[in-house]
View 1 (spheres, helix red, strand yellow):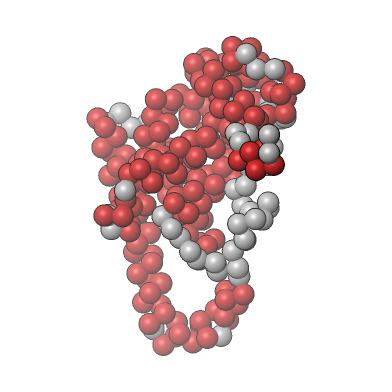
View 2 (view 1 turned 45 degrees about the vertical axis):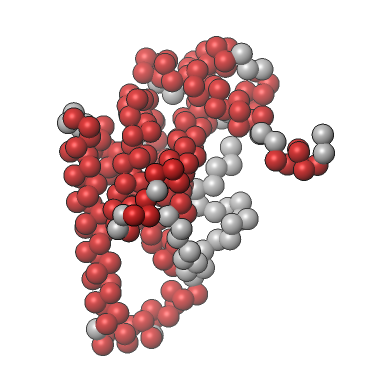
Length: 237
C-alpha cells in the first residue's frame, strides 16, 4: 500500500465507531448511553475489544458523542444533496436544522437519553462542544467565509437555536414535525431581527463611533484556521 493510499483510505477507528453505534442504538432506549450498552454493542458488532477501547477510550460518553458526530457528518452530505442554494439565506439555515432533526428522528429516545446525559455537570462541556460542532457543520456547509468575530457569533447564535429546537422537537407530537418547523422559523426570525438591529446600529452615528473606537477591538478577533486541533467543537477522544 502506498503512502497516498494510507492517507486516503478509510479510518479503521471511524469504521469501528460507526459499527458500534449502529449496534448500540436498539439498546439505548432501554439501557441508555451506558457502559453496558457499549459492551453489548461491541460484542454484537463483532469488534475487537482492544480496537473498541481505542475508539471509545472514555466509554459510554464517547459512544454518545460518536452518535452525535456521525449525524453531523451525515448532515453535511444531506445539505450538499439537498441543493439549498435556491432558498433565502435564513431559510437555508432553517432547512439545515430541519435536516439534522430528520436524521435523528428514528432515534428520538436515544437523543432524549443523550440530552439527559449531557445535562450532567461533568458531561456539559462535551455537550456544548457537540452542539457547537453541529453549528459549525451547518455554517461550513453553507459556505461561511467569516474569519473574524462573526465566525464565533454565528456559531454561538446557531448553537442556541439548534439546542432549543432539539428540546422542542423532543416534545413535539405534530405530524411531520410541523410544530417544530414553525418553532425553528420563529427562532430564525428572532435572529434575523437581531441582525437587522445590528445593521441599524452600524448606520447610527453613535454606533459608528463605537465601531471606530472600542468596537475596533473586535477587528483583532480571528477565527481558528482549518488545521487547528483546538478549534471549538473539534472532537479529540
